[in-house]
Every structure is written in C-alpha cells, then in structure tokens.
Image (cartoon, rainbow, N blue to C red; front, side):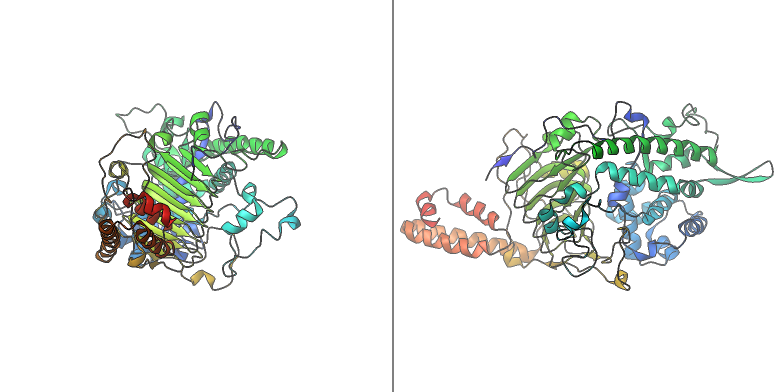
Length: 576
C-alpha cells in the first residue's frame, strides 16, 4: 500500500474561473445553503412561494424567534420535520454568533430561529439543481449514460459505476457552472426575496417597501462579497449603507434601490463567469482543469489559488492510500471527495463541511466535521466520521461508522445500507472535535430519519406517486461484525495529541463483541506462546484471517493481527 501526498493535477493549473485579481468586488452565492440546506420534504415545495411565505411572515412576526412547535403548527408539518428544518438552518447559517448556531442540542427550541433567516431558508427550497452537461455526441455515450437508475428504474443523475465506465466527470457541472446557476436563480427571485425582507412604510400617502440595514444584512445568508478569509459584510459593500454611523441607526433604503444594486452586481458576476466558461469550452481540453473537471488537488487549491473560497477537492484517487492532516488543509474549511475508488483515504482534520460523491469500494475516514457531511451516489463504501450531522443520499451497500450529534438523514434511492457506532481514533481527534463543536457524549448513530426517495430539487421528472415513497432506512450492523478500525501511525510530522481511545461510548452489545474479539486473539496467542508451536500458531492465524476477511472491514483486522504479532514473526510468515 502506498501513500500519495495529493491527487494528480497539472503542475500549473489554470486559475479558478471564478477568481480574478478583483474578486473581492464580485458577488458570490453562498454555496452552503444550496449544497447542504435543501430538504426533500414535499410540504416545503409551495405552489406560490412568495404568497405562502408572506402569510407565514405575518403569522409569525409577533414572535421574536421561531421554535419547532410554532413552525410545525404554521406549516402543518410534523415536529420531527420542524426540528430538522431548524437543525439544517443552523448548519448553513452565515453568522456564527446566532443563538441557533451556538445552541446545544437541548437548547435549540429555546434559542429558535430568526424569522428572516427562516424565510430565506424556506424560499430556497424552490431551487432546482443543475443537470449534468450533455455530451456533444449523445449517441456515442448512450450506453454509459442511461436515463434510468441502475438500481430500480427511478431517474437519477448518475450511478457511481456509470461514472467510472464513462469517465464522465467532464460532463458533471463544474464549480463555475454551479455558481452561475445559483446566481441566475437569485437574479430571477431577488425581487421576491427582498419583498419578504422589507417592511412596508407610508411615504407621501403611498405604501412603499424599505429595507433597514439589519434586514439587508440577512441577505448574507445567500450572497457574499469576497473570497474565503477576505469577505466583507454586505452593508460595507453597499454604497447606501457603507458610511453609516455605527452609533446611529441607518436610514432604511427603498427596496427598489437595493434590487437595482444587487441586480447589477449579479449581472457583472454572471458576465465574468460566462466569459471564463466560454473560454474553457472553446479552448484545448485539459483533464486537470479545475473549472471543467473539478480536479483541483488540495495543494493546488490552497497553494496556487489564494481565492479558493475555503474548499479542498480530492478527486480520482484509485487503488491507493491518501492522507491529509490539519496542516495540509490549513485555510480550507470544507473538503469534497469525488470519484475515488478502491482506496483508503484519511482526512484527519477539523472541518466545517465535507462531501463524498461518486466513490466506490473505498474506506474514507473523515476527522471532525462541525457543520454537515453529505455522502451521495456511493457504492460499497465504508465511511468513518465524527460529525454534527450526516446526510446520506442515493447510496448502496455502504456502511457508516458514525459519531454524530444529530439524527442521520436518509434521502433518495438508498439500498442495503448499514450504520454502526464510531470505531476509531487518532491522537488529535478530541482536539479537532472541540474546535468544531462536536459533543462526544451524544451519538445518535442509529436514530436515522428517512425522507423521500425523490429529490424535488434535482430538475428531473419522476413517475406519479413516487414523491410519496420514503427512502430506505439503514440497518444496524451486526455487533459480531463490529471491530475497531486502527489508523496507522504513518504520519510523523503531526503534532502529538491527547486522544488515546475512541471518545464515543460504545453501546453494550458492540462493546461486548469488541471484548470477545480481543479476548479470542489474546487467548490464542497466549496458548501458543506457551507451547511455542509456530506452525500451529500459523494455522490459527489463518483461521482468524478467513473469518475476519469475510466481515465488514477486513483491513482493520489485519492491522489488529499485525499489532499482536510483533512477537511472532515466524508464525505470521507461515500464516500468509
């Protein structure tokens, strides 16, 4: 097994198309609400979004903050779904000082959500994701880009195995495509969004909509100026609020003036993105182009792209091991693992967001993720993560070893999934968990919440009645198949930490299984150490290998045996 420091890219990749020397003057959509904030709950897809949310605003306006009970009553949804909305909103809010973000799990309802943030969150549930690009010769790829899912006939964007066979990452939307699509959505809906944030006042006998500076700042949930680490607040960027006296309340601004200013900025940003996308499409193909194939390696994203907006891409790892630690990801608050196969990946760092997409036959260890993890379109993947929340979509035959503070969310067309308690550690794990706010005393790994099979945000048509079908839930892993995953101490250079064991308490059945496994190994080696029969010891090791290799994590038991075989080199040689 080899350890690769980074995925393969061109040594001098083209800069991200969204960046330029004056990127701080460009408006960007905040990706987090669109990537981690969309919920496939049919009752959140309103026939007339603006009218429904205007009525909701008037109904809930007497409340200072909105809790799950008030929200459930107003939208006629279950309290579970209302709490899910608040938890999801907290995970994508732009303000770390908001009481909802800072609230402990048992304080969420008492903290509640700001009504304006909630209105914006509910509005973007109408967003439709961008479809994959069409191939210039559609007939040539028809056999590897089927219109129906490989699982059961439901339409889906793609299956991981189709992705591998067709080498079709080039036809998935790039970051620039997604950003342009999100900006276009905001451009189309900005008038309605501003009307929901504005207040009505009477001016010269006529009703007029105006925005206060406070209301205007709530648009920061959807858009921002500048890149990661160099953002400016909206009121600083806007000429009508830029020079306001901090000791005096700013004069409200007509909503029409705000709309004109934002529309001009969105148009400029779209023009910039469109020009760069056009230049890429008309230029020579480059497999490592981060705009086209999203193949930015971490090194490229961080070292050569100072306006990388805090994201690190790990793509195309195959038949390898891959290690990234906190020092390697300095400056990145999120990681996207894309199209990796037959590999073991260790990403041992504190993160805000993580996405695993289109992977198969891999084991992926994520460090501590304080906001949200999304795992989508994966097959036969084992994911081990400590996280605030996890969403699993359109996966099959995967196992998830979770230390998670909120209920794991199951959406889309899932099949034969299993969940198990968290089963590993590394020296800095508890420090990383503290950095991002994960509580080791809370682990809701087996309290999965299933939503719909159909994602109303995917821009695809679906059969009648399918929207009411619930996603298949995950089964608990048999405790007899559970064992610790040992992270090899390959890294050197990393600062030592204090974590010596799994910080999450194992359920009794899994603890008992773990102890039985360790006792079995200990008894076998103790007995054969006494009789000093290397060949018989080798036969025993073979038997243990055969049993454990048929389990869930074969490589894990190999590590365990190697650890216990330090005094039995001859026996180990005979066994293998």
